[in-house]
View 1 (cartoon, rainbow, N blue to C red):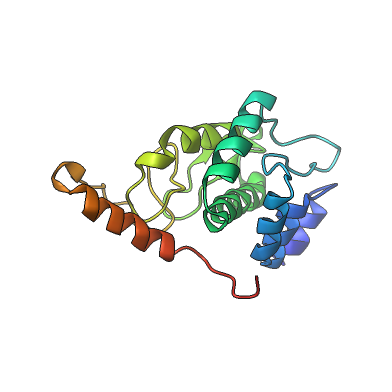
View 2 (view 1 turned 90 degrees about the vertical axis):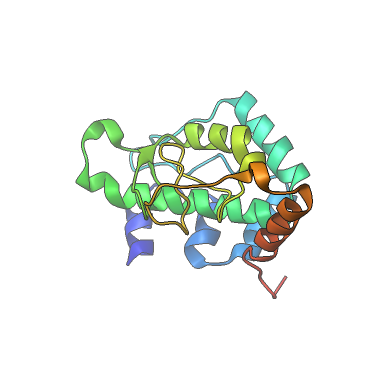
Length: 180
């Protein structure tokens, strides 16, 4: 039903969006390796683009995320952003015209923001993210695996080795597709 709604509301759908809709995450990895730009989104009915990411930002994203990070992490980031696009599309009918085309973070906060703002937030902060999710709401800092309770983190007393162990644990907890 969600797939049908997304296809009916759009003139086009990118390969990455389609792969997420189908739950075929290994395809996302192949598209990333092939150099497909994840910042490009499909067209709304009527040919209107929901977002336009500046070419300079898009280039930085491709260099930073898809040449420096493990493929599983890059795939997860793209998956989450496409899910936020889908959530935004589903909520576009419930909101005023000024918010059409914005991403929606989803649970727990449901904040709406531009895709450019999310990509920039990821570029600026991904290395400092030590909680459960590297993709956080750029408005409140919530992750998809978190509740709305305030985050209380004190990394000042955590040794470098402990931070490394935490990072490894989170990396190993990323989605894994055994078909790849």
